[in-house]
Image (cartoon, rainbow, N blue to C red; front, side, top):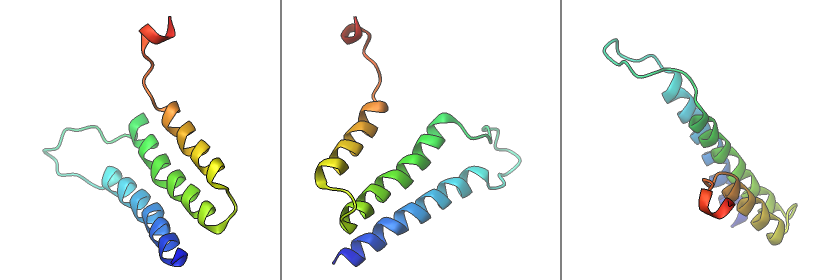
Length: 89
């Protein structure tokens, strides 16, 4: 069972990151005026497509406990959360 889950995670890691990079850097038609560079949101997307499946694979292999995996996923979610000015004051 874990073999198939690890395979799915690996497919998401490799396929998702490859497709995101390919779709961003592929040649576009001349009428398309959108920017071709790599921005902050794109880098975040690739990081999520690689880091979250990696945490899942390491958890299934027994290298990470459930508590550590939960803490890593929660930390990633909190880093990307927008800051509310009213809460910070």
